[in-house]
Amino acid sequence: MWNILLFYHIKNTYISIIKTRLYARVSAILFDKSVINVYNCRRHMTIPQILTKQLSAALSTVLGDALPEGFIPAVTPSQDLRFGDYQSNAAMMLAKQVRTNPRALATQVLEAFGESEAATLEIAGPGFINFRIRPEFFASMTEAMMNDERLGVALTEQPKTLVIDFSAPNVAKPMHVGHIRSTIIGDTLGRLARFLGHTVITDNHIGDWGTQFGMILWGWKNILNQEELAKDPIEALLAVYKEVNTRCKEDASLLPVSKAELVKLQSGDEENLSIWKRCIEVTKIGLEKIYSQLDISFDYWLGESAYNDALAPLVEDLIAKGIARESDGAICVFSDGFHKPQNDPFLVQKDGEWVPVPAIIRKADGGFLYATTDLATLDYRTTHFNADSIWYVVGAPQEKHFKQIFDIERMRGVSGDFRHVAFGSILGKDRRPFKTRSGDTVSLQDVIDEAVTRAAKVIEEKSPDMPEDEKAAVSQAVGIGAIKFAELSQNRMSDYIFDWDKMLALTGDTAPYLQNSYVRVRSIFRKIDTQFVKPQSLTLTEDAEIHLARMLVRYGEVVPSTLDDCRPNLLASYLYDLARAFHSFYEACPVLKSEGATRETRLALCDLTASVLKHGMCLFGITMPERM
Image: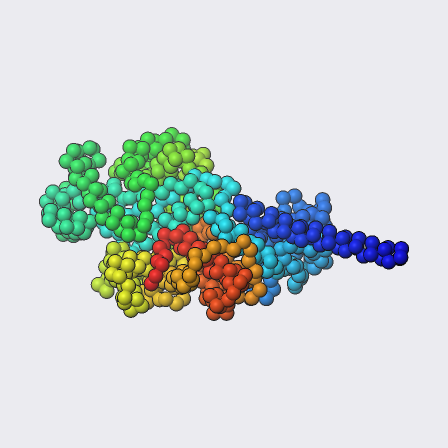
C-alpha cells in the first residue's frame, strides 16, 4: 500500500516539476517575446542592433580585458541567404589583435553566445559568424511593426538642425531638365531627415542678383511685350534676355548701356528696383506652379540678393585677417598650406608643378562673385538658423567651388558640418546631355506635362471604365511618380539615361510597378466581407511568408541608412525588393482561400506590406493611388 502511495507521490511530484519547468520556459519565451515587441515598438531596435548587443556580450565574455575599448562588432545583412540572414566578421577583425586563429575565436564566441531566441549561429570560411533568424523571431518583430506608427523606424539619437539648399533656379529663366536632380534629391533628403527626427530648414537659393539683370532691365523698358508677359511671364522674360543678349553681340554700344542699368539697380534706383521686384514676383508664380505639381515646398526663398549688403564687409574682414589679398587688382584667397597639395582645392597640377587656383571674392572692377555670396550665405545660415549641418544639393561640376568655400570657412575659424551633396547628369539615349531635337534645353514643365500625358494613356488602356476625375488624379500620381523614382533609384553620382518607356513601365524597377503592387495588395481587402482586424500574433511556416516578413522588418534598418551618405537609392532598391517579395508570396501562398490563423497571418503580412510601400514612397513625395 505504501509502495503504491509512494509511487503516485513521486509521479505527481515529477509531473508537477515538469509542469513548473515547462510553465517557466513558456513564460520566459512569452516574456522575452513581449519584451522584444514592446522594446522594438518603443525603441525600434532592429535585428542587427539586437544581434550586435548579444554579440558584444559574447565577445566580452571570451576576451575580457583584451577586447579593445569601444569596439562594436558590425552585423550586416548577408548577400546570399543560403548562408543566413546576417553575418559578422568581428572574430576575423579581432583575431589578429589578440593573436589567435579567427575560426577558433569564432568557435569560442558561439559557445559564449549560447542559445539565442533570435537566431541560430554558424561559422563559415575563415571565421565569419552567420546568423539565421528564427521564424518565430521574425514573427515577433513583424507583430511589433504592425502596431507601430513608425513601422519600426527609430528616431535619431542625435537630432540636428539641418539646412538643405536645393533646386535654386534663376529668376527670369524657366526651370529645365537639369533642375530635376537637385530639386527631387533635395526634397527627399528633407523628408527623410524630418521623419528621422532632425529639424530641417529648406532654402531655395534663387539666382535673383547678377549681371543678367542689366540686360533684362533694358529689355523690360524697351522691347518687352506686356501681353506675352501676362500670358507666360517666365517665357516672356527669357525671350527678352535672349533678344538683348543677341543685340549686345551685334551692337557693342548696347552692352555698357545694360551695365549702366545694373549699376542703377545696385545703387537703389526706384524704377529699376520696382522692375526687379516684379521680375522676381512673376518668376515665383511660374516656379510655384511646378513645385506644386511636384508636391515640393520651401521654408525660405532667400536668393542671392538677400546677402548683398553683407558682401563688402565680408571681403574687408577677410583682408583684415590676412586670409584674402590683392592679385592683379582682384581680391583672392590662396592656399594656406593646410592640406597636402593633392588634397588642396586652391592648387592644381600643371606641367608637373602645383600652381595656385585662388578663389576670387571681389573682381578688379569691384564686383562680387558666387564665392562671396556663398560665404555670406554660410555665415547667415550658421548664425541665424543655428545650423549644425548645411547641405548643398548641387551638381558634381561645382565640387572644387564648394571645397574652396568650405576651406575658407576653416581658415576663418568657422566650424560646421558643411556638405556638398553632388550628383551626375541626365542623358538622352545618345548618352549626351538630354535636349530637345532642336538642341534646346528641355523645359521641366514640358517633362512633367509629357509624363502625365503618357501616364494617362497607360491608365486609359488599363482601366478605361475609371471615372474621368479619378483618371486625371491617377495619371498625375503615376506620371510625376515615374519622374521622381527614376531619379531616386539611381546612385546620385551616376549619370543616367532619361527613358520614357522604362520610367513608365509596369514591370521592373519603376514607380508604376511599385504603385501597381500597392494597388494589388489593397485589392485583396476589397474582396473580404468584414473589416480587417490585426491579429495578436503571427505564425510563419512557409518560406515565402518568412521571406516577406524578413523584408518587412528590414525597413527600420534601411530608412536611417539613406542619410549616411545621402543615398535615397538604398530605399528605392529596398522598396523594389519588398514588392518582388510580396509578388512571390502572393503566388505561393493563397490569402483569401486560406483559413484560421494562416489566413490572419497572411492578411496581416499583406496589410503591413501596403503600409510600408505607401510610407516609403511618401518619403519620396510619391502618391500611391488606390486603383490604377
